[in-house]
Length: 320
Image (cartoon, rainbow, N blue to C red; front, side, top):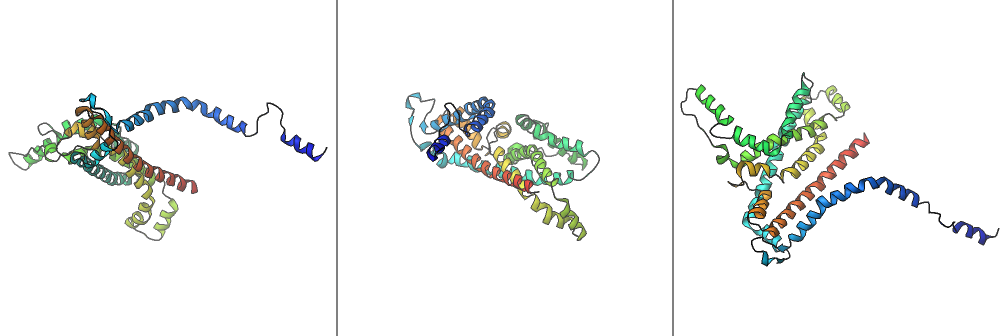
């Protein structure tokens, strides 16, 4: 056989034969096919409404003036960033988010350190401490508003009255907790709900500590504080970051506590509540959509950092 015939035999394939690379590609599509309905459903439910919101955010669309619907460009975004009420709601959102996340992290760390010790009934105590996170947010807010904060029949004023009478006083104070400290009331209710979430993340970090480092520290005579400061805390850094980022993603979108406890009054209107007012009360769909897009962009930025932290945690675990 000549060299030309040999080269032709290598190049020419039988009619109908498929390339070798087509088989793995076909197999991959066969494996992915069962997931396509779920993917289509996810796109229809989440992405299409967001695209519609994005389009409406560039329009002047108020339901009270249906004849004045028109394209306005970035005017709605300019209004969101310059309007005094909206800027105040952004500041309130940051204050509530930072306060809730920091206090929840601190309390979650303390509880996780306690639950990391072995004692009788630890499983039951852990389950009871997780319970606040499983309560429906609206039910949690109603519980704090009526059962605890109410100035007439709330638990806090009841305990305060009993303590006051215990010391022989006749006219105990009956503070209106929500009216006098509205932001603190909202933060307290959210901290009660989110502390178990932080506790679970940090407890997982505590239980993944390398035992060899603690044994070496004990042999070297390190105190409990030194062990916590130089071994436990650096090990928990990634878990603290993860808890802070995930907590920020959820707390920044909180609407239930603000709506239920204060109805957005007394300086507690955060950005989600302001969007609700703009959309359902002012019927300004364009401005509400622009504010919603701003919230989504901020959430995506926070989520990006959260995903990086999760990826770094997985890489560290894979190296062990």
